[in-house]
Image (cartoon, rainbow, N blue to C red):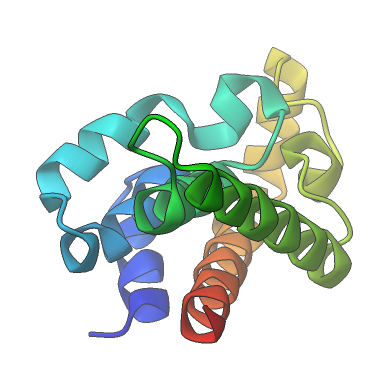
Length: 146
C-alpha cells in the first residue's frame, strides 16, 4: 500500500493526523508501526493547541527518521534534516495556505467554541484528511528526490 493511501486510511480509523502520517512510513524506515502510533499520539490537532498541523509534525518525524542526525559530529545529516524540514514546510504552506492548524481550519481549536465550530462544519472530516494526504504526498516526493 502506498504511504498516501495508508495515511488517509489510518486517519479514517480515528488515529490523529500526526499518527496517520508518521505510522504510514515508519516500518519502511525501521520503526514498528505500533511504536510510531504511540510516538505520534500527542501531536494531533497542532499538539491539541492548533499550532503546527499534526499532519506536518507527523511528516517531520518521518523526515527526521529518514535523514536526521544520530551521531555526534554528523553535521551532514543535521544539515540535510534541516534542509528537508524547511523544504517540507514551505511546500506544504504553498499548497495549503499555511502549516498552522488553526489557520487551516479557520477557527481556534484551543476553545470549546472552536472545536464545536469545526465539528458542526465537518472540518475534521473534510479538511483534515486533505492535509494528511498532502503531507504524505510531499514527504514521498522529498524522499524520492533525496
